[in-house]
Length: 238
Image (cartoon, rainbow, N blue to C red):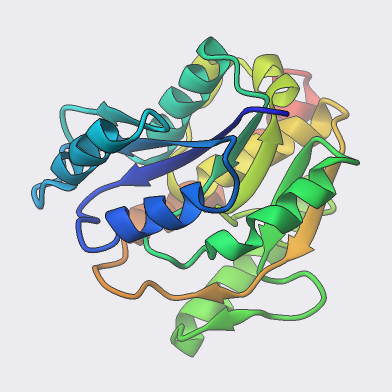
């Protein structure tokens, strides 16, 4: 049976992390969890350290400071490849991504290489977001689809399952994006390399507790990065 790693980046997620990791591990006995914590002031990492003592299926990378979502996932990807995991999940720490959807990813990944949990496939499935943020997210994905030509409805979504072959094909040192732009960059490079990309519909529910990490800088990065990826693709520089 395949080995699976779920990567969960964290910054101040002490209220969520134990319950989330426990829920993920309960889905399937071959699942392991890697928490990449940016030295959370609320000491999220201490809770993960306690869980590591309880089970060998929990791993932790504690970083020196707040280095960003993209670099956290890159470290997680490298960990997955170094330790021989067959499938890798990306997942938020705030329960906006429901662990109960994991079996749906396993079913879909049988026929493709990257599965994206989509908020906008066959309709809009987002709960408890202000209309302004929902419109911003939806239009950002329309913008991305038009500029890149990538047939994906939720290119900025962070709930994904990826085969190890995809990760092995990516030059991790050339992935420079963070935030939404990171998700777009990985999806686009995977698509342009000829891997099979698919979406499954999920219901995305806004975080239960804590504060969103969204910022104007993250939005601006995504706007600029889309054009950068398209241009680099045209000249074969991906």
